[in-house]
Length: 252
Image 1: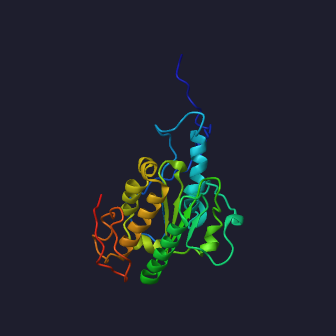
Image 2: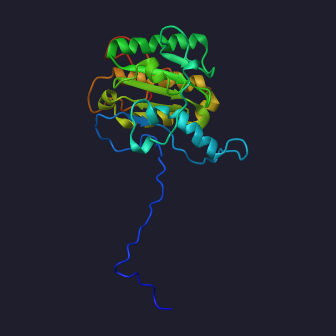
Image 3: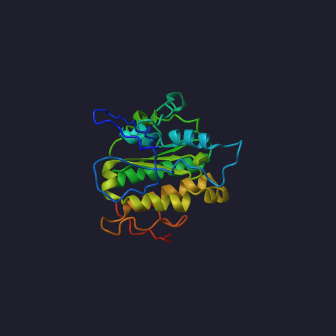
């Protein structure tokens, strides 16, 4: 058969396939911008998935909640516009805002008290706000924490949700992003956020060690080597001052 030839006066319209947004784990190039960065695990199948119990669809829906900050909390870029997070202010506790919210029961009362004091001291000494939300999708206040915590460019929202395999997810304010290299969040999630780590040591250990490592990172003196290492487990001296030289590291 002769090849089919489109007449010159015929307009051919091609419809592009719909774009599906994908959130990745801090693998973007190191670019300094004024936009907030989000660092979370990708929505993909895993060898640990069990057919019939936690499907890839469940994983993607959990991604939308665990990366609620990636979708709408700090930015509303086109790549994240389709991710729909939960917005349930009824799950927020009454009274003054609490820096550490555990709606999933991963932390003991004593650990919540300790972490609260740690993030309060960090904010007092450095001006950066670290806020922790421990959740189990779909039981989460979700986007309601934006106003509850008055999230701004100096805020890091740490969402701990093991439903994605990696329990550590972060939304980093633009001012923090100028001070802390994106690679730090990748290494932190790789060290304390993996499924192997939190299954072996517990969700509380992942959350507590992550907070401690962030505390140490923020207190390091500015420079090219700032936050180049992730603090070892419980390797932190008591918080004191903006740049506390009493920290020590085991590194990755």
